[in-house]
Image 1: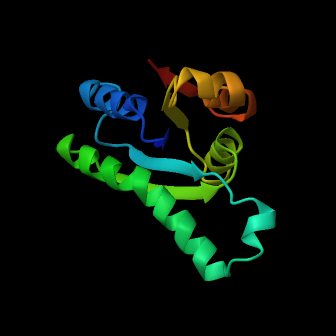
Image 2: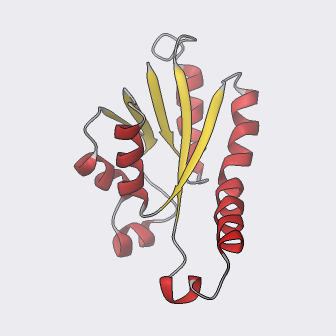
Length: 140
């Protein structure tokens, strides 16, 4: 089974990894895991003054801030996880990636960085549920 783990670097990302590691009967060794993060795009009016190389490096660096600690945590849990990122709105990018990469299940935390961000921007989990055509397991 291909399992997608959308991550944002919050404590809920760690809870998701802990959940997977502690439920070996459900998440056994026969699965493929991909941790995925979405990087917010640089506004077009600012990006036009930057070279493509600078913009690409910025996106890669922002993704690595999330994915690098995740790789370390996965190693502690003895999980083999591939990492990917895309630029865009988180919920939309997650749903597009899940569909394009033929994921069988999305496992994600039910909350992100803060409650105020959810009020202002909308819940990523809610957006994924609305957009995703594969099963989604929310971990609290």
